[in-house]
Length: 234
Image 1 (cartoon, rainbow, N blue to C red):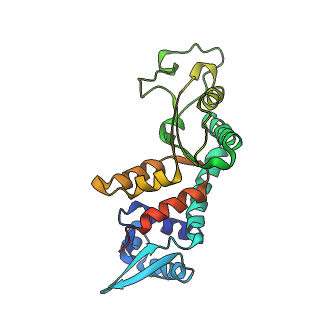
Image 2 (image 1 turned 135 degrees about the horizontal axis):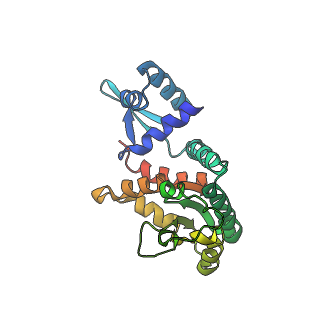
Image 3 (image 1 turned 90 degrees about the horizontal axis):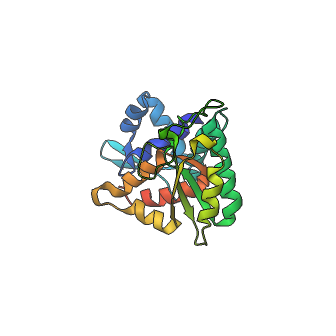
């Protein structure tokens, strides 16, 4: 199962969304025979389209198969589950953030993504009695200030910005109040962003999102991603 997920994810790093079996084997460090067999197994399931081109066989994820988005969502959900299962300040804040968005936005929420995962995961709770130092005080003009940067995919609604921002700040220790930022897009807007070809803007936008942590809406997110990748194939 894990190899199947890894193989599917390998296509997401490719701007064209297309890989040969040889490229897949090299990318994942697999014997060619192993990659060949797994690709054809996925082809039989309809997860991958395989198109012979000369001596090579070009492969791409099949966006029309609902199982493809489910497979990618499973891999992403595994990473989120591991992160939320850690006994740490960042994991507790992320779990509360996920619940807040799901309860507040309900059916309007398609996906919620924590963008600044790398910096966020390094947050540590201050020691008891510790006095706040300048770098732990929120500063909207200082990119090094502790922050929670969210990317939200929503159907059109009245977004309760003030209420959500206030709630998010209460999840942090008083000595570590963050800058809370968010970008809100509709599914159609995100699809347009990912379709953008000039200067590989669509691929850059996707890689920005992929470096984050999906908190909610795994399958919905990858359904949109696959639609964008399908337009680049072959």
